[in-house]
Amino acid sequence: MKSLKTLVLGAALLASTAAMAADLRIGLQDDPDVLDPHRARTFVGRIVFTSLCDKLVDINEKLEIIPSIATEWSWNDDGTILTMRLRDGAKFHDGTAIDAAAVKANLDRARTDPESLRKSELKSISDIAVVDPATLAITLSGPDAGLLAQLTDRAGMLMSPASFDKDPGQTPVCSGPYKFVERVQNDRIVLEKFQDYWNADQYHFDTITFVPMPDATVRLANLRAGDVDIIERVAPSDLETVKSDASIKLASVTGLGYQAIEVNIANGARADNPLGKDKRLRQALDLAIDRDVINQVVGAGTYQPAYQPFPPASFAHAPDIGSGGRDVERAKALLKEAGYERVPFELTFGNNTIMQQVFELVQAMAAEAGFDISLRPTEFAALQSVLKSGEFEVGQSGWSGRVDPDGNIHQYVSCEGGLNDTKYCNKEVDALLNEARATSDPSARKALYDKAQAILREDMPVIYLFYLPWPFAHKAGIEGFTAYPDGMIRLAGVDLAG
Image 1: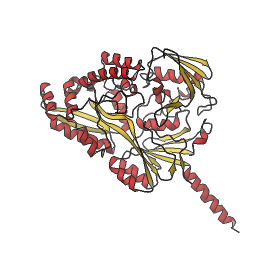
Image 2: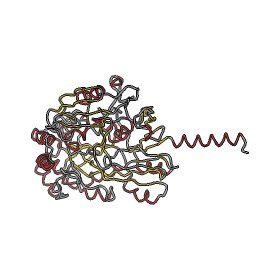
Image 3: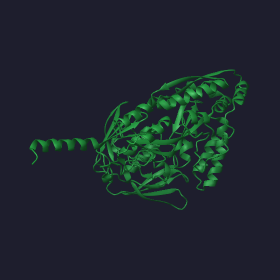
Image 4: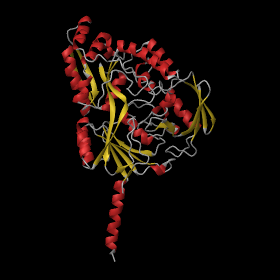
């Protein structure tokens, strides 16, 4: 018969093992900005929100829109009224009910708050009516083919209205499977399981800890050492290492987004730079960049060259754009035509391993055409503030992509776009993009996007570089993990083996 001491020690060991298994640690490439989905703009923030803040609707791995807080929805005949039925018994983290009045308060805040970056995403909404506690009717100023897709992301995320005046960006009170515990800037964000979540039995970890690790090599080393359980954005140069290590697994999927650079055209004093004032210089910079080199040298063949915001999988993709590739002599001729031999400018970017490599290549390639680029690396969350405030000449612009093409273009280049850091404004582009929003037929929408892209290729406020793959890696003992094309980490059904 076992001694009492042995039994106690055994029980303690089991408890310790269980406690360790109950905490899932996720290595992120960057530290998110504010934890307020209406005011946030970072990709890594969206990963945190996926566990923290429920949405009206979501997507599955096939990009189909599926229920979340809204369990049913329907449109009237002319596509201008969206009626949504809400899930019974869903709660915010403060215990209050998620009802139609609370959803209306969130959508109203997202579309009217002066600091909201979701306003352009919800611009088509003209009125929201509470039909009854479980039903709301969203009236649009005109048909909006992309609205449901917008509600699968931050525009459709829900926070407790009682928290709106209590700095939710620092202490968010949301509605997802995990609730906020603490944040230490550039060190960790800790969430704990919300026991009253409507789908709580599908979530198997007591706590989720997000750890920012800008260095891709460090992220992978931490995964291999067992210090984190999942990492996002495995460096292309590390893919073979991951595949050859039996203790970890690769989960990769082609994404919907892109990496680009944007030129400050009218956002404050720093728009007074040569590229901001002359589109010929922006066209020359575009021609100076060899995307195939970036793909092979940095991306190991996984960074598909991009010349537009729509990936090849999108119906809006125009295959002829960028078919001419790099043309250094034409770039030099454009500089000369604009009256320049050499053009200096500063390029601000998020300081992580991959982007450092990408922009050092851009710097070298552009030099051959006559550009003298000064690289300005900055902490990623700080980059978002720099771009928004206009404290840049040329800056990194990354977008994780949306299911509907409207989400990849409208808010970046429309005059009042919430993420239009360049402050580019062309009324003809706005009219085309707004008409595409109001059109349901994909072929008709593509024709409108083609016309808009012809103007944008001439004006060149944004220079696209490559489309984003989403390579994740996780411990071999993690079961049920699926990589989604939007790059989010969804933890329903994810568990540790054994």
